[in-house]
Amino acid sequence: MYSQGLRDSKAGDDSPELLEAFQKRIDNEEKIEPRDWMPQAYRQTLIRQISQHAHSEIVGQLPEANWVSRAPTLKRKLILLAKIQDEAGHGLYLYSAAETLGESRHKMFEDLLSGKAKYSSIFNYPTLNWADVGAVGWLVDGAAIMNQVALCRTSYGPYSRSMVKICKEESFHQRQGYDIMIKMAQGTAQQKAMAQDAINRLWWPALMMFGPSDKDSKHSGQSMKWKIKRFSNDDLRDKFINATVPQAEYLGLTIPDKDLKYNEKSKTYEHGEIDWNEFVNVIKGNGECNQQRMDARNRAYDDGKWVRATAAAYAKKQQKNEKVA
Amino acid sequence: MKLYEVFLRAKSGLSHKHVGSVHATDAEMAMQNARDLYTRREEGESIWIVDSCQIISSNPKDKAAYFEPAEDKIYRHPDFYPIDKKVKNI
Image (tube, each protein chain N blue to C red):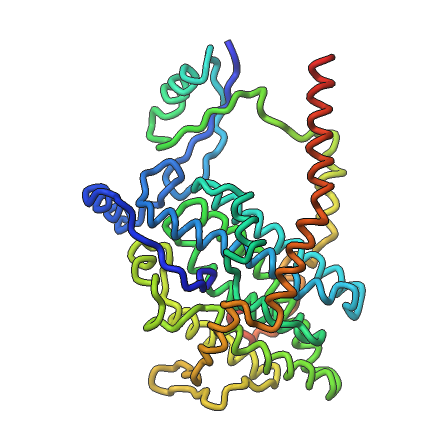
């Protein structure tokens, strides 16, 4: 999901013997650690995926930040702040996991700020009413959990370990979202309409978070073979739908998919056609909020410049003082 | 002789854990000593050595100021949000 981008990784010049030995380790369910030999393409795929995942956490703060000053109660405000703080933390865990592969954090920041690196398409949608904050926690974090639980077993040790920690924290995110949805769905007719409006707008973008359909997913095959990914995009998407539809029913809300039906035989839900044109368009930068998100990230980076410079100057001065003393 | 801290990874996939320390004249000797002292019974398959002076530790005096503020933030835990048993997978 976090490698939704359409860039393909190229195979390196690694010798067939080394590649074979590496594959054997993977097949054997051994985890790969930073100092171990790994194919160039494995390293590059991971750097791309982990850094995109990190960027998604960081940019993911923005749609929620929109509601901090307008949260309906102090309690909701504290919860929202704690959640946003967690997203920043998740970004940091992931950047440090990517750094173990030899990528510098500065380079990753640059790629995000220049627009070269991608982040999850979902964050290019706006959060228009308070129920969106609930729907983001319930659906967007719900989809993220589905993907991240699977990634806890990814073959790269540092990535796997950060996923374990992140999953534990995401559970709070999803439940506080669902808690908001319960309150809204059980509230006045107007509140219930806001909840329905939120799910109407966020349902399809949440499904797109799992990335292109398996038949169109370019680098899924190799990633599955190297066990970077453990489940296909469509499998995870189906799992998410099966878990989420009954939760919507409990709320008394309608999933905005007229073709959604329950297959009695397979005991699973079948969904309608996803608008992949919209998906590609948002990834390309033409979503409702792409420009706004990029501007906000760039502004934050520029505004923080003097803070970084001051910290560096202070550290230098301290060093000098130590030498004198 | 200098003091070095020793961290072992039991197997790939797990993080390194602190197991103790060794005395040595340099990093290389510390690595040898750690290998001899701490891995006699297959306790690990990777060693990290850190110069003990390089460890930056929190001050026990700061314990309350540092860690108590997390105590009353119970809303950071999923079980703060009661959810009907009928709702599954959440």
